[in-house]
Amino acid sequence: MSAKGRRPKQHEEDEHPDERWMASYMDMVTVLMCMFIVLFAMSTVDAKKFEQLKESLATGFGAEESNTVDTAVGIIVPPDQVDSEETVEPDAALAALAAKEVDDLTALQDAIYAGLQEKGLEESVRFEMDERGLTIRLVSSEMFFAPDLADLTNEAVQVLDTVGPALAPTTYQVSIEGHTAQVRQFADDALDWELSSSRSVNVLRYLISGGGVLQENIKAVGYGESRPLTPGRNAAELAQNRRVDIVVLSGQSEDVRSLIPGIVKERQAAAGH
Image (cartoon, rainbow, N blue to C red; front, side, top):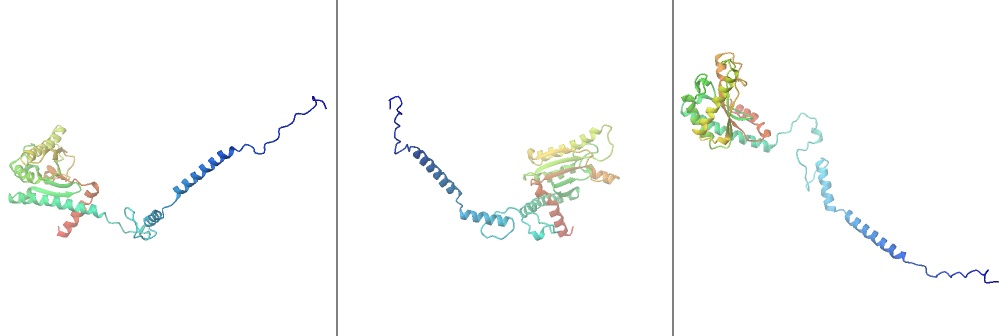
């Protein structure tokens, strides 16, 4: 056979093919194993913490009682009391604060009343306690101001000489509120507001200068005839509407202040008033 027609001799196959891919494969398997180990470690449940969580959830939903953990907040109503006519009592802490506020305001009222009683002026004012605080009402403006004027009378000065020193040591905010009667005394309606404002300002000035009340604790407001106490159908009712109210404002929260009227009513009933 000629050289031209002779087929080239094929190289014999290697007995050991290239195995470098094994290194990459082993690296990948190692990384995967490490990843699963980390995942397993992260998923391990703390039996103690799991038990605490279970107890807490059971207590919160009322399923069972627990002496170990109780993280429930608020009032849990048992299922048999749902939609019943029984009412949940107010929070004891709020009630205690309201009772303490009534005690403090009552002590202030008693001190003022005792001072007025020594001067024979106890009938010159009226006291009222509600959710705003304590109102010291200067009834019948003719006793405290000259007719249709804002000037303080001698009786007004004596009353304020008792009220001011009692208010001065306290931290209460005080609102002086002037009012007039529902009659057309002036051709200009604005003068009615000016009279009520001027009277309240004059009371404020005297409480600051003569009574020692701090000016940052007191303010003056004029309401004119917009907030009457009575319909004003006769002279006596009109006299009640012409007034200046010294309101000792409670500094408690709205939730606490809302309980004050109920406590006052209960104590008045207990005292037979």
